[in-house]
Structure formats: C-alpha cells, structure tokens
Amino acid sequence: MYRKLPLLIIVSLIISHLTSLRAQQILFSEKTGEIWNLKVFDVGKNEYDEIAPSASRDFQARYSEVANAIAFDSYRDAETRNLFILHLSKNEISQVTDLDTRDGHPSWSSDGKKIAFQSGRTGDFEVYILDLSNNDVIQVTDSKGFDGIPVFSPDNSKLAFNSSGGESPDVKVYDINTKKVQTVIDWPSYDFIQDWSPDGEKLLFYSDSSGVNQLYEYYLNSKKVKQITNVEINFTHAHYDFEGDKIVSIGTNKSSTNLYLIDLKKGLVSKLTDTETEKRYPSFISFDH
Image (cartoon, rainbow, N blue to C red; front, side, top):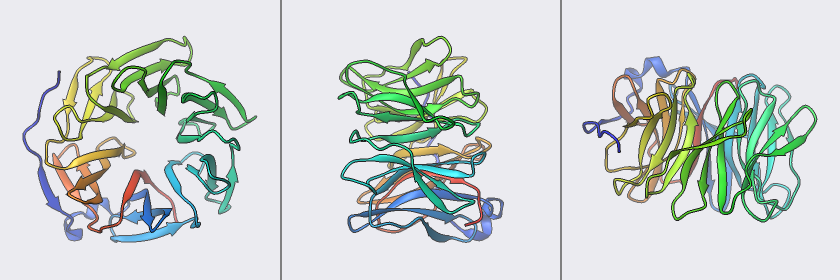
C-alpha cells in the first residue's frame, strides 16, 4: 500500500538554526474562547500578528499571491458559513457567497480568478467553482454523500477532492475539461486531501491507516504513495510551501495543537509553536502585514 520511512527526527525550533526560514510566514486560524481569528506566524521572528479580527469564527483561509488576497469561510454574517475575501492591498473584506448552506474550504486557482469550494446548497455537500469575474457558480460533483475539500491543480485543469459515499472518504481527481473522475486513494481508512504540490506531480493527504494520522504523498504518474511522517503525533491540516520543499501542518500531541514544519529534503520535523490554544488550517503566505 505504501512505504514507511524511518522515524523522522523531531527538533525544537531554534531561531538561530533556521535563518533560511526568515521569509516564511504561516497563515492559520486560532481559537480564543469561542472565537476563531486569522493569524500570521512569522517563522524567523517567532511572532504572531492577527489579521482581520472579528468576534466570529474565521476558518480555512487560503492565500493567493496573484490576487494578493485571502479567501476564507466565516460565520461573520449569520449562523452559517459563507465565503469571504480579504483584499490585502485595500485591507477590505468582501462577502462572495450569501446562502444558508455552509459554504467552506475555499481553494484558489493559480491565476487568482476562480475559487473552488464545498457547499450544502443542494442538501448534500458537493464541490463547486466560483468564477470571480462574473460570480457564476458551477457545480462540479453530484453524488450521494459528502464531496468536498477541493484543491486546484497548479495548471487549473483538475480538482482533487474528498468523497465519502461509502464508509470512508476516498481521494478523487476531477478533470475539469473532460468531466471525468478518477479515484486515486480508496483505502479502508480516513484519508483527507490537503494540497497539490506546486510542480503538479503529487497530492498531499493525511491518513489514519497506521492508527495515528500521518502525512503521505501520492505520486500521480507512478501512482505510488510515500509516507512522509512516522511519529507519535496526529498530523492533520497541511500545506506545501511555494517551492514544494516544505510542509506546514497541524500536529496534535496529547491535548495541545501546534504548528509543525516538515522539511522534505532534510527529513526533519520542527515544532514551530508551543501553546495550549487550538489551531487549524495552516498555509504559507508572503505579504507585508
């Protein structure tokens, strides 16, 4: 099924040893009381900044360098989730969906013109694509059960997503041009798509197939799977950096959730934060805030 790697070394973050990471910033959601706010962690400075604070719950933020914007889902306007965009150059927020249908998990196309997302607007969660130029919404999937967590391929020709019409969620790939769907991971475990590598060759997902959530890469050409992590930490939400050499992930150890950095070239797992607050949905970002 997959090849296990030797136990990766877990190292604590020592700023003087990570000079190459000084330009890296990580966008994520952090919980304070009942509020979830978007924050940016500067790896080099070991500092947090809060962006677009609200008395609401902001989740699943994704950054587009081309659009210079952050798409996220939030309860800002009602008791259900909708999609919003934070335009960084203007420091303004616009609401892009306005339905009582729990719209979430936005994913930018690489040209910044479209956003894929999941929605329950038909009574069942399906995948949709929103064209930001005219606000047209196209329904991508139409199957019984949950379809969601979409991720654009770098060339915008495909979408990877989760589908759980059966007992466990599968990872599938939808070809936008041919409208054909291919199942790439159908293990009898809980497997969740996280990202598409910048070179377009791999899918990043996490799975509990070993009993603990670990990170894996699926190679699209060879159809082989490589296990990235093999430690006693539950890794969930994860995202590649801009070059595809590193991954930021949420790691849960006992009762705390923190940010971890996985260096794919060096085979190192670094713990970036060490706080008791709950964190989710990290991704890399690059902007002056």
